[in-house]
Every structure is written in C-alpha cells, then in structure tokens.
Length: 219
Image (cartoon, rainbow, N blue to C red; front, side):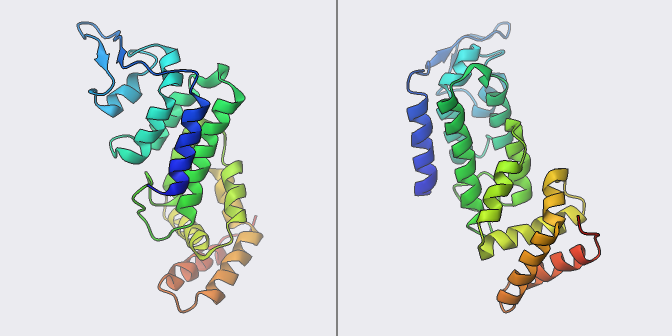
C-alpha cells in the first residue's frame, strides 16, 4: 500500500476513534443470526450495513474498515462504500467528513500520479472510473477537478486525454467534468503535453484526444 494511502487511512481511524466498531452485529433478515464482521462477505456487509445489518451508528463506527476494504479487497467497490457512508453521515462531525473526503482525494492524487494503470493500491485504473465511483459521496466533481488542474504532470495529462477519448466513444462522464475537459484551457494543456511528449509511447493518445477536441466546439 502506498505511504500516502496508508497515512490517509490512519487519519480516518483517528477521526473515528470515538466510535469503536462492534465485532458482532444484529441482522434484521428473517432466520439469519448475528453477523460476525470478520466472517461475512465484505460486499454483503457494505450493502446491508445500517439497514438490514446493524444500526446506522455502525456505519459510522465501521467507516475506517469500509475504506480500508476499498483498497485491500477487490470485492468491495468505492462507489458502493461512499454511497453507504453518504446515506448516513448527516449527523457526523466535520472532522469525520473531512477524513473521508481526504481519503478520496488521496486515492485520486495517487491515480493521477500514475499512468498507465492499474495501480495495485487503487480500486480503479482510469479517471473516468474513479470520478464515477467518487460520485457516490454526492459532493460533485469540482473538488477533484481542482486537484486535476493542480497536477500539471505527464501522467495527469495522459489521464485527461484518455477521458476525452473515452467520452467520445460513449463512456459515462459527468457533464461538469466533460465541459471542463473540453474547455480551451484543457485543449491548450493537451497541446503542450503533445509537444512535450511527442516521443513517448502515449503520444498517440494525446494526439487522438486533440483530434476529438478539434472536432468538438469549445465550451
């Protein structure tokens, strides 16, 4: 696990230290006995937590466990976990919400810093997939776009080119993200990247994105 991801998980655990997790949860499913957290299928726990398994407070207490599962168990996806957290976090403290957002941001930076994927510590390999998963928190993409603008690196540029091309061929992309990606500053960014990386293996991806944007009216 990357040091940055491990540190973000530690911050999550520190933020939720006042809410110790129970090892055994009650089940509201008929004819099903108590649920042992260490033994249940992680995805089944995520899908039922706070509703058919345990109580709403258990979502809060198990948030560190849930987020750790995202990067350690390929059966658990980021969107499902964030959607479950967002459904119950109205009464949580600012520190708790911030820790969750900071964890998402750390994963996002780790993705933008590397291309091509997949990256072993990350739940997804592309910006398109990550942005879709992160939407489960309900925050909108503005914060993640701001980070992307700051990450002026070859890998972040490659992710941008890939998103432009994927969207052109039908990938689901938030309209806000798509409008940003097609705007003139991002076109100019990709033009600079194409000039800088003309001899790199991903130069064709940059050229393809510029071709797509050239055929698309700027926003």
